Figure 1: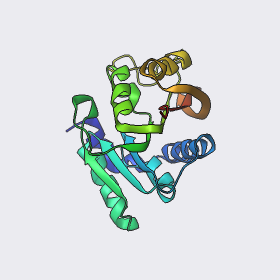
Figure 2: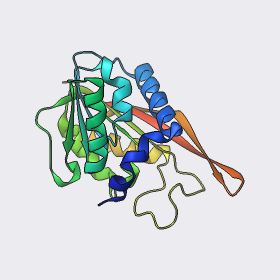
Figure 3: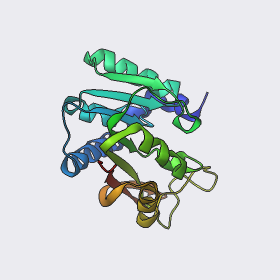
Length: 206
């Protein structure tokens, strides 16, 4: 059982995570012309907090994660809400376990920094997007303080130029990066702040 499986049942109880999802969704609405005909994919969806914020504005949402526990919570939420156009999928896109079809929108929230080689997922996103499709990535901005601690196997976040460079090298057009949310954490009486960025870019249309 993974760490995410262990914490899945309590994940949605944190009000900061809920507020973060709402803010990311709002920033996405301001940055791209969401369309009710679009097929979308959320990478590293967790309990689908972000997708639930966007569900009324998209035709179909595929929820991809490697944690069965997180997806079980998402399935329960989907059933309770009577949602029919959200599809949870246990898959590792980095290992070539791909969903069928292509998408007009791919988005991710706080997932890439968990990957040992996050740049490797960008070509997968490229291949899964239709021409003219949008990619939105909400991620930690790299700062002086580690968000996860020294033993974390992933990344402490990304510099803006690093995040932009990953998508530009793959061929995405004109990435825009804006401040999106601030995570505040009490560390022994000191408030630590971690900035969340939202990158928006587009696969060129021929």
